Image (cartoon, rainbow over all chains, first blue to last red; front, side, top):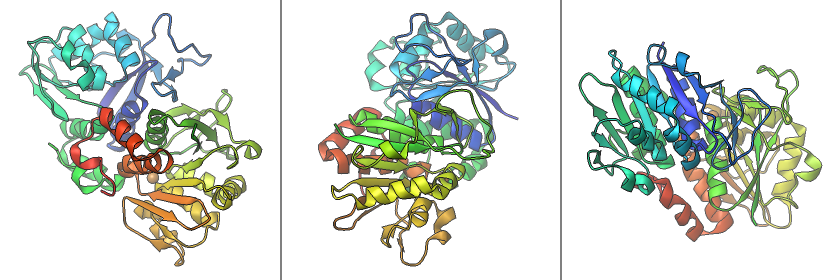
Length: 210
Length: 210
Ligand SMILES: [Cu+]
């Protein structure tokens, strides 16, 4: 069974998180959401364990686990997904655990998949991934050093030989194209088509590339 | 300030719920999510208050309140929204509190807005709303009595004079068109355009009708 680890933090964009998690589940992928704590959260704390993630528009989501880097690596999951939402993306980008995790997926000998959407793409910078085609929310475009080949596309797939496939995207409006690209890479085109059908998209939004 | 009440239950479609809640917040609408309990839930219970809603693909969301029908009426909120997800929609459709609430919004002298998406449109049947143009997820289309004018459209707006405007839609894939229709009705076209921009939609998905 294909397995995906999806990060979540206070300030994560709840649509991007939920669209990815739910749609991957529809494709038969086993999803685990992992909370990334941050000292001095501006959002307050909660009594649940793991803590509730207070997302960017105040939807409160209970993650499946709190991130334990020792059991979150690429030997355990096929894909690592980093949603946007500026508050959550900054927490993830500044976390050395997340930076190390991203590099371990990127360099794993069995080709893994890394997904980053919206401000989540900032992690590609702080994890010091090598330059390659990438996209993000326009509001963080200027942060990408020149060695990245920045593209204003809904979804960018970068497949450096011997490294993880890096899939990046732009915002809540491109979250469906993003997750369907991930499903096609992880489970094939037939599975993507099977999942798209019952979700009832306006006809122009189901294709890839868009 | 425009106010919206969004229902949630175990089995609610988490994308439909989250896309509506988050996007309405982006439009400056004050959103309150209200949990609809169900005896003998198949999903188990939780220790939080209100209880966590275990959604259709197991995303766990903490509602803002548990529904109190006495303080959830159309004198308090401008709009009442019912998301899909079969488990949650059945709970809402079978709830006499929800049926009464829908009728109170429908008949309120100051024109209110009622939104139903996906299997959530079942509540129009059990609340015995009068026949009018409507849509839903195709899987529940056959349940609509003949006096409803069923339409296979992404979003259907029905404005019976003197009654609430009923906005219905089809599934997760039409959730963005659905919420932008609600924003245009509640806050005007300029606000809709302002919210659409930073969400970075592929160009063909931002218009309405689609
Ligand atoms: Cu549904």
